[in-house]
Image 1 (cartoon, rainbow, N blue to C red):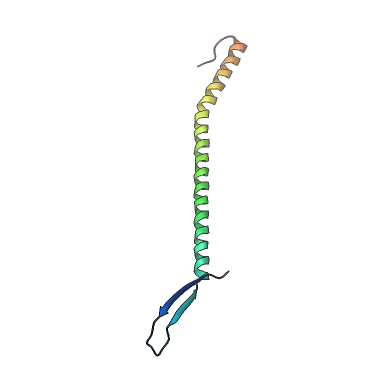
Image 2 (tube, rainbow, N blue to C red):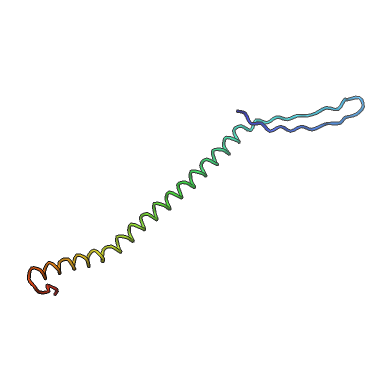
Length: 95
């Protein structure tokens, strides 16, 4: 496909010279291709920003879940150990 920019002007003249149209045709295909490439790159940049934000949120969520689960898992483990100690010895093993 070829893109063009067409401009036309009606030129009036004297009685001895007839009037005419002056037409200029400029090939703007390269400019249009460059504009389309810029649009494509901007769209891809937007997709990359969104993917980066999503990845960052996933990392923050995983980090937060880990930090919240650590004390909960430790306290659950301590309860289990305390229960085992009570069953085996009949007394509390807490120090």
